Length: 241
Image (cartoon, rainbow, N blue to C red; front, side):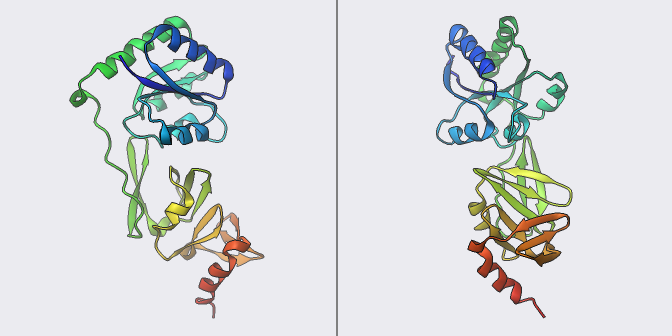
């Protein structure tokens, strides 16, 4: 059975062990090895895979957070040293959950589940969620997280915070990851949003104050960079009395 897989784990020893198990016991194609989630998300842009062995406890972006950004067709085997995450992992297209240290016996059990999953006819596999609706400047849009689509009203958004290949949308009650660059998001937002920094887009309607080259939204202080200052302040002047 031809299965393209990827290992994502920040522990080199854990990566080496899984690589050995895969190469010695399966005919699968190991497409790559990544040592954190941002690296893996970048890799997946040009190297789609069928299956990811995904560690949960990683810096920068956890395995659970990364899973929420993956295409629904990508199956996952979570790996971790902490059993308490097992229940949460099944909110994603999870085939199995491997507790570290992973033994060969336990890997064989996972192997059988994986091959049984991919042997199913396509019409018997779990249905994929609806495609994410992009932000279009309308009243609301949807953000995909795992198997759930979160409806977000534009007026509720406080700001977007960018980090490399993804962004974080922040409302008073939610912090949702979006696998899109801040520049692309900004091009599709309504005029009530403004770029104030390479890492921030703010909802002008939700600003509390502007002081000393910073905007304030609740307890959040966001810098205004020189690059975006003039355009931003010209818009603010329209509302100054």
